[in-house]
Image 1: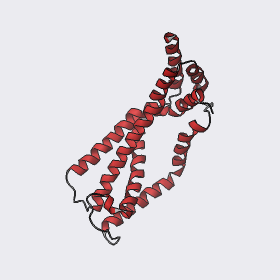
Image 2: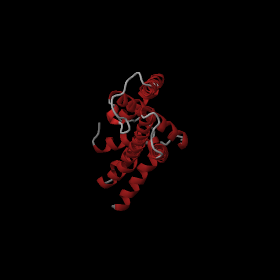
Image 3: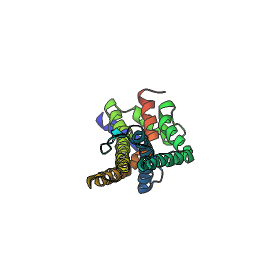
Image 4: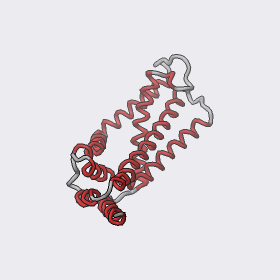
Length: 208
């Protein structure tokens, strides 16, 4: 029983890995970190303009006639413009996140093979599949995105504080930026097959 279940699980994994496209992990990590950082700068910038007290270094009320808010506003505008210029990529990313949960991705050659193999696995193996190919890459992406967001916080905080921050702040920003790059780099192989794996898991466990 266990041997048969293990064989079926490995067959499902083989079909999923066959779906893996050619991938440059470093470029993927840079692109993911850049996207998360720009989104973080826009979000943190808006918060900094509307609620400067949310940033620890800032004291009192900020006037738009002062230069730090102007720099932050320009930075937010630049991030928004970048997003608008690349809105097709943003829309594609959102669709890729939604698709596995609204329709079976049968256009992928490995979908049927992986679904058939996983359907013969016991629940424990299906859970294992979900943890390895669905939830772990999502979790790593979440950590990478939050790390980029933390970097954005330190950048906006330093601007609003006119650069009068301690040495630890740029160190923290660098550490979080490095963590974001590292997590995206490590998650890249699993993220490249995440859509198919998530669709296969949903097809087998709950159906569409």
